Image (cartoon, rainbow, N blue to C red; front, side, top):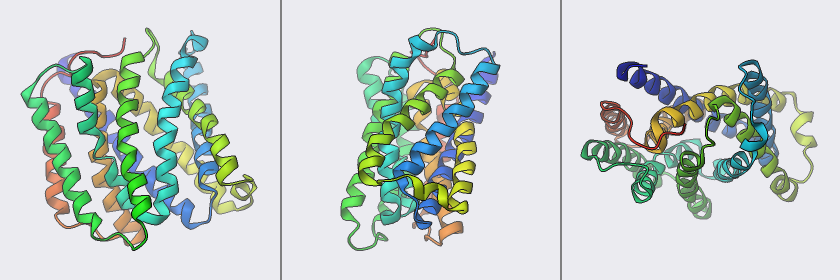
Length: 300
């Protein structure tokens, strides 16, 4: 694969995964509005997406060494399910737009951790790209803060904690990616483990899961979300393999811009002020990041 083809593949995965992430956030708001037990909803979607991807990985011949991948998948699944559970619980209180905006912040944390751990070389151009992406996310988030409803402060804090765990997950997957493992198989196992990790929390917070299956509308949302998860995480893990943890974290600002726009369209959540400026900053940061080959420490 040439450098140009590699950058094109990274861009395609970045846009696909970022847009799909925004869609899953919007679907979580729909599920919450419909009265879904939210952690059971997340568990069903993660497990369903993982099962579909497992079949896809088997068809592609990627399931060799599955047992060796399970410890990695258990850690990755927990680091994935944790922030998602926070987001699914908070979406009813702070809105889909703000949940989407929080995904703009892991980029700076990921970059800082990657530099400290030697996964990222010193590169002023990439540092500027990170800064532009973060500036776009901060522009959106600060404008959104003034629009939050009264009494949402606790949920706001919980939602804002998500980026810390997300950044840790980005680093974990790059640092411990099993040698020779393929992205579809790892994605499948990670989603299955993440779904399993949600079950104890769902039993405590939601009680019975029967409410998720009695309503035809909720069953439909589960099915749609499973399909989106399959697309999202195939692109997500391929992006991690090709671009490394910092390039992967650029999907957060992409999702923030897309999700804020979707929240306006679907739920009449108003766009934050300076939305156009924020979108331009995110676009500039993404383009600058892709102008040079991705650095160091790609998984084998």
